[in-house]
Image 1 (cartoon, protein in one colour):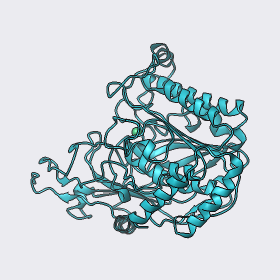
Image 2: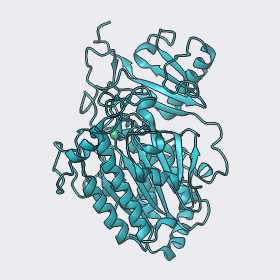
Image 3: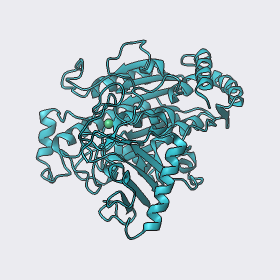
Length: 489
Ligand SMILES: [Ca+2]
């Protein structure tokens, strides 16, 4: 769909949008949307009692940092409780190993490469504007997008247009800077959210008005609870988007002391301060689940728990996964994902199908009876998995990170097809894919820690996956990296 048509649709949706529409009127609104669907945006797939949606997004939480993902050290009784009542995904991925691109993919269902929003905002050097050659680096970073374009249709806009009350509480990170001002284009209010709190880290802006709330967990939770209560009689989309457990690594001393005293505190994958931060985050999850219970909303509320990228490598080791934030190894992109939807999702179920943050948009659209027909939306609905009624068919997942991040090793791309994953390192592949180390091929079923590069042993498979990755980049319009003429050879 062209951007012009998208922009027109966005305007139509804004005009149609009622605030907090009572449930009985939703059918009429969905009927209007069916007409819009005929214009090519969405189709009314089926009538349904639309669920409330609570989407809890952690910041930088690693795959291993939850009890239900096997940790004996990190205590997450409420996240575990969510998993016990829902479906836990073992192979869920962030579309990017850093914040903003993954958040953009959640909002739009599109790969960051398609949006050209491929790094965190405002990004590693060069920080603003056109690419500036950094002489020591071999490749030039493309001129990537420095905010989520207003023309993009977000899931908040889709839900708002269907009569949902929409609330955003916490970290946005999709505008050119973090200086939120109500009404500013590019902030949540211009992307489909009615009730907005934006927060960011201590030192980067105003501190929380709550004591001992460096990561704004209390503030984000209070606003989320108020929003849920206020909209209890109408469908709502509550986007709870935490700053935790992103740096700074700091938490209340008494809580840290508890984990310092815990068995295993000296192991590299166990960080007592981070564990305390995880506990605070988990308590927030518990408060939200409790409130849904108290208001008798649990049975008609879809709850998603996810993290935007892996945790920072260094203070934390993501054993058994390799690497961490800003890296294309599993530690940077494989995330905890839990979906609870009573009556639809079998309690305590586990799914090992690879899924991605691009899939939330079409999933939530289908949950309210709409099917995405925009060919630029890359994700697919996860409802067949959630209902255990079928699979997703043959598909591969892709990553494109044409950036030098100060935590990462080098820019690259990746593809996962079935059990296999190929990583292409651009600094080497620009000299030819036969360059030693240009391609790394892993069998994740046998080698989740990505220790055994099979590219030499399985050249045909490596070549096939490389070809698939290359063709996807062309289809998605991914921005390539060029050789830096000023770099030292
Ligand atoms: Ca993050």
